[in-house]
Length: 310
Ligand SMILES: Nc1ncnc2c1ncn2[C@@H]1O[C@H](COP(=O)(O)OP(=O)(O)OP(=O)(O)O)[C@@H](O)[C@H]1O
Ligand SMILES: [Mg+2]
Image 1 (cartoon, rainbow, N blue to C red):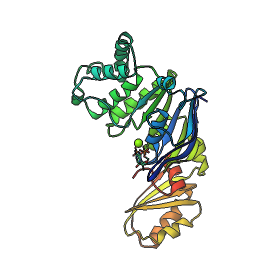
Image 2: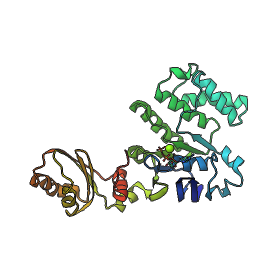
Image 3: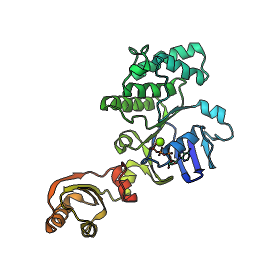
Image 4: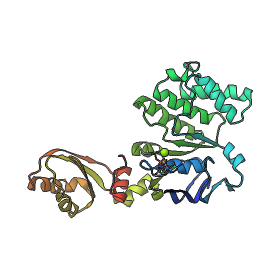
């Protein structure tokens, strides 16, 4: 194993932010850490990157404990933080220069790498413009670039696409795939199920400080019996109908959010008529019905009874 996280814990005064988790990354894979707000993703990543000290547990990179030889191991890693860490009044090039020096790079290599990284980011043209003239998506890209300068073997990305336009998102996701194809191992954190499905070879789903499931996407979906997600938008839905829905054949979970009722059900297409009937029998007006193929959102819903996004 390239990276092993062993019984890792971080306990704050009032909170078990990370409550004894185990997972490992193979060299050359993209591993996803998927979880809602407050799951403990950033805390986990900060411990791996050596920014905060674990309360307990260990992190092993290529056979060595990061707690015992942090310096050498840190040099192999690049961290893309959740918050954008750039100086707004400096240009992209100057920001990258700053980060390169932080990583201890000599100036000749750094100059070459900055040009290369700007090319990878697709931002060569804008390199000498101030960061505060950049769009959110462009800032995100430079934020990633800062972690690429020293050519890390392991790239750790903490929600690198939050709050950006679809085009920048696509650019970033494809960049991640490219970097991986060139041999980089990637730990990718997100609360967007679609991103993790698109990118990751293996996934750990995290909730409230624990890993509640992990495996390949296929393994995770199989774990919930490849259930479909049926979403019914309806007027006059009454809470007692949840019980009626729950006992229908194949139904695993029912979640109500205002007018929207989400039903996790095996063989969703076959069960659709039964489901609609419950609504009709109770004089509840159905406005729309959609049926979605099994996805990781469904796995999370199945395991927690809650939606991944809030
Ligand atoms: N320095 C701290 N002191 C006290 N509690 C903290 C600290 N850092 C994080 N926490 C708590 O630990 C839990 C996990 O936080 P963390 O930031 O790791 O979650 P996350 O999965 O990254 O969430 P998000 O998607 O919002 O970034 C949260 O409940 C948070 O409030
Ligand atoms: Mg976070």
